[in-house]
Image 1 (cartoon, one colour):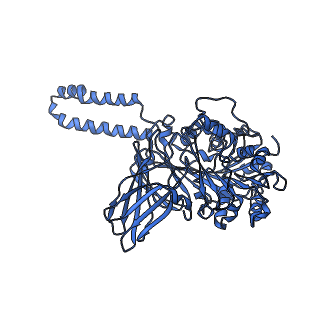
Image 2 (image 1 turned 30 degrees about the vertical axis):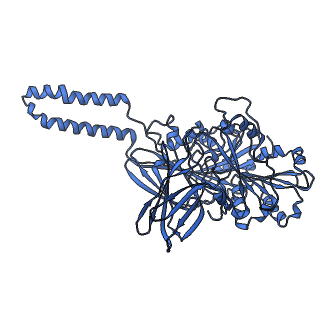
Length: 606
């Protein structure tokens, strides 16, 4: 991503690989770590002593002792003589529990077809069952400085003290090196910014940050001085205020803290001539808790799964979603039937053949009957297997489109499942989205069958830009993958002013509209006002997609900023403990390809 995190380049510590022809490539995480479940920002440094420009592709394959974590081949790049640095996004990846960094194998293939394999490097990534939170600190060099204790809310700080596996990393981020696309902002959980640094963002970067916030991001703006004293500040603040769903507080009073809900995201503005102690007195801690989307009502009991640092990757609700995508009528051949067929085969080639051919006096025919019996039982086994596992390829998808008050798309998430009946290679072109392979193996206790892993796929291109996903399918092995984008090719149906005023939505009228399969309002963890039916895509699954249960990190936090990760954590947009929180849901499509429109809003009363 262009212009991303320039300051990180100066501090990155990486291993070096040296090719025999003099090409040197160094790769390392831009901040020494990355966010759990998010894209991995890395600095790629090339050094080429040759006199001419070197053209070709770099391939990065990351592995640990459990196997391949990702396989990425870049678009064709030009490597000029000298040393060059660039920042890229790697796909979401984690290392096994208690394992070290991933082994990163880098290969360069020139346009002429020459292949140079470089030495392995170490790539640090979060551990699979542990949580790393990345906080970006947007500050200008020589400008206002952020207080050191703004990074975590009180509930997370307390959990962090109890559980050392929970890590919050705060990293510096200059305005000139800030992300230029909302996809690139997904590398962060939360952003802290001084007002002068926010104003220093150019129009493209500020627009990218605003779209990320609308899609569920969180920004804290620190301004211990009158906002009007910073040129351009009022314009930026007004822009966020004008697009707000709900505003609490005022910047025009001493010790004022303004809390702004921007669609799915949140902004806290602390502006005024106050010292830090005064801000604390004014409720700064509660404002930070609100920014991190802590739950309206905390969990009153603690269980073994409430280790806040542990990522609950096989959550029952996620399993219900994945299960719904997987073929429902697919199951393995029962062991009893296999034993029966095997017993029949042994009897046929043994006693039955011996007795029958003996009575006929033609035991020499065993040279013909034995192969014939083998072929017959082989055909029977194929027919039985096809009957249980199916004979036709299956491709299903669920598209979640989160809609804003003005009817525009805030973000688009898609889950796709492929279940092939034979070996095949699929290539899917994706533009402007993050792509992750969902490890169905995490849900093996819920799905009785063969499963896929991230090793099934290869990426070609630029992550977050134009990329091609290549999946090598194995017979009867489902592959599930997801995308996250901040645009959508689908047009959002209007249904009158339903998106602007969802609290007045007539769900019966929407349900009767052409192409609509179902429509309802989610309140807490049930459908408001009616029992309803399950329809084409079960309401239970939609409710599970909309709000996460209280476990692990989500015991105290309701939702997180968009990440595009494979654990499906960021699909939730709803706090089940908030009595005013609602989500209007409209389902279109058919059983195999569903489009679910969601509009989160707050009711005027409980």
